[in-house]
Image (cartoon, rainbow, N blue to C red; front, side, top):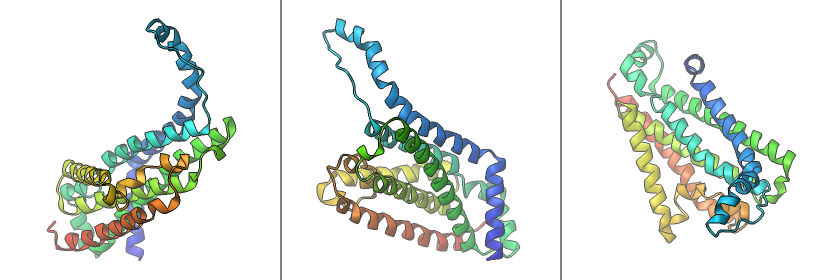
Length: 256
């Protein structure tokens, strides 16, 4: 346990020193501010272009915005933030392969499965912290300007998107366990997410696809109930455990 905590401390300090954590925090806080800002500025922007549109024969009516407008923007922006997260941490293992630091750690007695667990905990903690910051900033501004009660099932919608991010992180760990470069990790993760999305297009398979967890808008508007997402939640949780369980024996057999 002590060796695991020491390795975790090393990983956290390295992430702070390289500036990755600061970049992530600034990015997620920026998106948290952008969500209510875009909603607040929408009527003004529509008014600015109303004259131009009127010349084209298009009439612009008064645009009403509320917390729902901002939360809709939140769930549009968070995929971009997740992509940035993937790009920043796609080298979570591959940089160790190239530098040879894992071999040094293993010779000092650190178990290979602890490396996988530590890297997983590291990414999950960063994702949870940054995602939570983005949510907190948006929630605070929405509460100040409007009323968050306009959005149905808000916290559940936020939870399922967080879980989707957890699944993506487990994919990063899985592909990092056997691929030698971060480009391969990015491609493997992207193809897996795309496959899940294409699977969700099939009506009978949609309920089981982790990509269904991205459809938070249906929850906010009340067009879908909580029960609609139960199978997707279970499937995502099972796939997360499978990814980590498969990564450990791969790392155990890997030559450094």
